Length: 337
Image: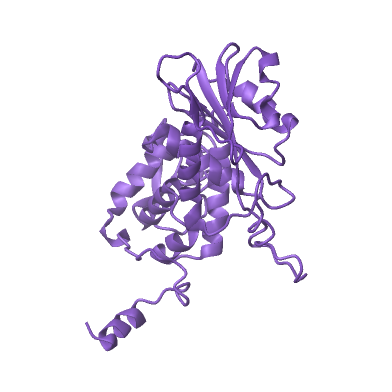
C-alpha cells in the first residue's frame, strides 16, 4: 500500500481524540452489527429483575398503554394512574440519549477495563461525559466488593505501591506537576507522595482476593484489614515488613519470607516435606495482573484509584461477567450475593 493510500484511509477515519495517536488499539466498532431490540431486552432484564413496571406506582407494563414509539425499541408507557415511563426511568440511565447498543458496549467496555479514551473513540461519544459515567459505575462496583473473612486456612498478605497522582486536575504551579511526583520514587510510598499503597489479601485455596488502597503502609493501616479478611487460626504468609509483625498476637500463625535486597528468599520449606510453602508468590502474581489492568489508562487519579482496583478485583474473582454483576454496575443491587 502506498503512503498516499494510507494517508487517505487515515484522513477518512479521524476521531476527535486521534490527533497524536494517543491510543495504540485499533478502533473496531461493531455497534452497527448489534441488534437494538436484543440489546433493549438485555438491558430490561438487567434493570428490572421482576419485570418492567411503573417506577412510581408499580403498575406492570402489561397494564400500561404505549404512549410513544419514536425511540423504538425504547417505548414510553403510560400506566393506569397516568404516569409516563420507559425502561430507564428512575435508573442510572434515566435521561440518556444513547441507543441501547451503545449502553451495552459502555457496560462491556467498563467491565473489561477498556480505556475511556478508546471506548469514547469507538462509540463516537464525548470522553469527559463517558469518564463521569465510568466513575459512577465503578463507584457502585467498589461499594459492593465482598468484605468478609476468607474461609482459607492459608492466606497471603502483601502490598504494592502504585504511581497515582492528581491526573485531570489543573496545577498552575510548575513546581507541582500533578502526575510526576511519584514517578521516580522507589520503595514504600504514601498517598501524599502520590504512590499510595494497595494492600492485597489472597486465599491460597479458593484464590479470591481483596484489594484496598491505603494512605500509608503502617501497622494501623494494614493490620486491621488483614485481620478482617482472614479467619482466626489461619496461617498468613507475608514478607518481613514491620506492619505485619503483630499478626500472631491476633490468633494468626504468621510466617514470613525475606525480600530485602541481597538477602532475598522467595520461598521456604519449613516443615521439611520438600514443598516450599512459605511464600507470597501468589500475591506477586496478581500484582502483575493489576499493573497490566491499570496500564491502558495511562495514569489514574488517586481519588478514583480504589474504583479501578475494585474492577480488577471483581474480574479476578468472578472471571465471567454475570447478570448479577451487571446489576451491581447499574445500581440495581448494592451488594454481592
